[in-house]
Amino acid sequence: MVTAAEELHAGPVTLRRWRPADAGALLRAVEESLGHLAPWMPWAAHGYTAADAEAFLAAAAEAWGTTYDYAIVAPPDAIAGSCSIMARIGPGGFEIGYWVHPAHTRRGYATAAAAALAREAFRIGADHVEIVHDIANVASGAIPRRLGFTEVTRRPPQEERTAGEAGLDVVWRLQAPPSR
Ligand SMILES: CC(C)(COP(=O)(O)OP(=O)(O)OC[C@H]1O[C@@H](n2cnc3c(N)ncnc32)[C@H](O)[C@@H]1OP(=O)(O)O)[C@@H](O)C(=O)NCCC(=O)NCCS
Image 1 (cartoon, protein in one colour):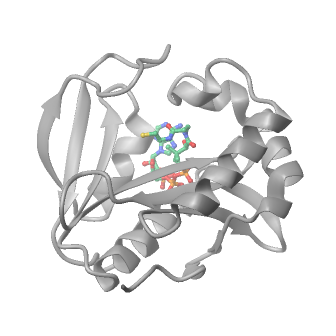
Image 2: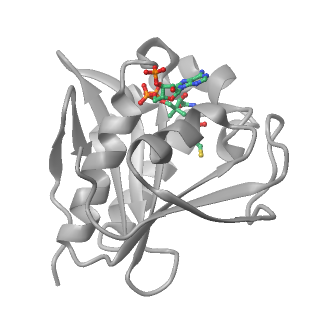
């Protein structure tokens, strides 16, 4: 079976497979980002502890092969966020997820990460990739739009609704690798 690369070049950033030794750096990055993540990410809505970071990294190690979780690393060596491709949308499909530390936003990092993840998903055999975000999450929605995804549906959320969300998910799909 073809698996995703452990490291991907994504324009200004590098995507590097999370490893257990990252627990301290992950905890620090999430703690510094909590106020910015909590409106959108259920796992950030109730605080975040060292045990949460360790559990995420253990689950990420276990899931490699179906879910690929990467640190977004900005030069020279800063954890600027996290992103994933997840084989959870049926045969041939990968969903892309991302968050970026507030000190690193508006620099194109999430767009570059999503483009690299989409290319990697197609390389390992995907026939489509999707990005899903709440309709109120304008920043997240800009990413698939910029990368040439097509909006395919709007539907009720499948996960716990968080404080910033309006309660309507927008689903975007791409059926060939992005050109940028
Ligand atoms: C959504 C998120 C990942 C965007 O990360 P980013 O690295 O800043 O994104 P990019 O720099 O690639 O921005 C792409 C475009 O999105 C739009 N955008 C980004 N942040 C925005 C904001 N706060 N408000 C409005 N538009 C925004 C802009 O059009 C931006 O392009 P521009 O800076 O040239 O104008 C980041 O804001 C984040 O982590 N948010 C909290 C977690 C989250 O919502 N994750 C996604 C859940 S579906």
